[in-house]
Length: 332
Image 1 (spheres, rainbow, N blue to C red):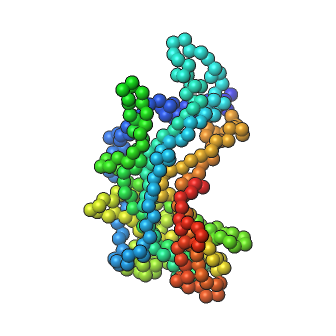
Image 2 (spheres, rainbow, N blue to C red):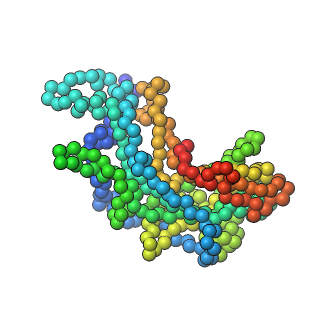
Image 3 (spheres, rainbow, N blue to C red):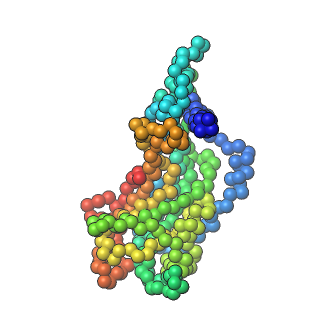
């Protein structure tokens, strides 16, 4: 009995979330409470490097938001269709298209899409004495990348438009001049070797003892945020007159010295995602939306390293792999 009530409550919540999306919506606006929260949000301090970089040193990757990311293809909402019993009924005073079953048969989910511009300096290495669990210091070769994120504002917005017959369609456009929220950047960097046996993956490591040394070399001593610190702040909107970019650094240790080709996947630069629904394995006892498998839009950067495992030099790392795209946007 308790399980049935709990399942019914979960499906009711899912229904409330979906039903507004099945009918024509209105333009997004902030409530006074949301405005107060936004006014008190902790905004990242701009940490522009003191050094002026030569042209081409900082490689900029366009954010490239896609209109197709603002909506999903029509699909049945199986948590409602298969999870709620007795949906088959014929209304006396409404059209059948107004029933929950009909609305849940072809659902289009819409959302605004934001994105951050990503730029980075050449990948480099540095030897650093890193504390070990034993309490001793060990000299290690650290791979690192200094990067910049910029919030350009003007996300892709879905705007309802009514025609002369009262029908509502949605236009996706980048509306300039509207107030845009700061964006919280939750980065995830994965370095993945290619053409090695076996291929290896490395999550970034926060190495505090390396941060000041890297900042002194790369920015003239201006602090660089690590991947934990940069996620604590919102990235404010930059304008043509005021650059509010935020600079960070990502580090890896114990990377295989035999690595010649590798990629770096960067997540968190956009809220675009997609999913696949496995309707065949639907479990009525599972939480709502458990049958969906989500994939996040990810920036993939490719690099080559011309050297050997005995003498590792930072000049050996180059952006790009012959015969492949230097970078691309993927879902994973």
